Amino acid sequence: MSFEWMPCFLADVARLPRVGVTEEIRNKAIEILDGKPDGLRYPDLVKELAAAFPAANLNTIRTVVGGTLERERPRDVYKPARGLYRLTKYREQSQVAETPSPPTVTTPTTATPVESETTEEDFYDPFAKYLEGDLDECTRAIPLGGNILRWKWGTPDVIGVYESRRTHIIKSDTVLVSAEVKLDTNTNSLITAFGQACSYRLFSHKVYLVIPEDTDDETEARLEALCQIFGIGLILFNRSDSDDPEFRIRMRAVRGEPDIFYVNEHVLPLADRLFP
Image (cartoon, rainbow, N blue to C red; front, side, top):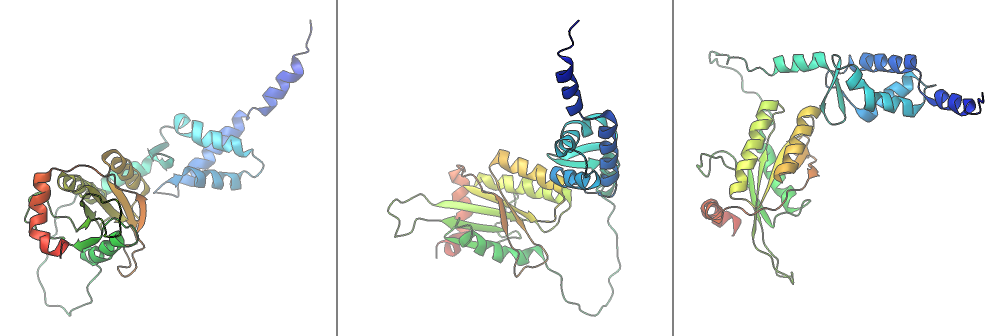
């Protein structure tokens, strides 16, 4: 009997990762994730595992994380978003944390006035300037917020228009741009903000959702996916500094065709400010 195939077979077997090694990598991955309530992105987890197993083949580590970790240890690990790994026990904890609690009733007391904290309204004007300047989406943008339009579907926090300039050879139609700015990182609040942004598509050609950059990875990933589906632009910002929010674009808004009836209904009360 000829055994000429044996060397090739042994060479192939030698290239396969040992079962013990892959199990060690999985166990170490779970150990690393145990100290990360927000989870870890794929490249960060691979990097930490590579540091823990310097002699291991990097491709083996990548295969264990990307191909078998969640499948082999479903009770321990899950992916709340694409490329994000998290322990299942933290999913249960986050669900409990997000359960709304009953409002606390406090008795008014006389207190020494203190410096007010940063509010959502503090970011409206900086974002209006960002739309005009860095993003170049508007020739004029103004902060609104509140209930200025007295419309049950809500009022955009910032609204602006883009008109062709005199120097443009090819002229375009007027474009209305609306934005919803959210300072709160609570998932329920951000879901509500996304719903408001969707409602602005009724009268706006473009809509932006503006959320804090420290929003948890799972919520941000889901919002990004939804914004892509609905054509809504997504902007991240530093909520700790209203003077320099460092707005950062993740996705540009896709132009759509709103209902012209509602466009005129919303522009009419703002005509003097949008078209001075």
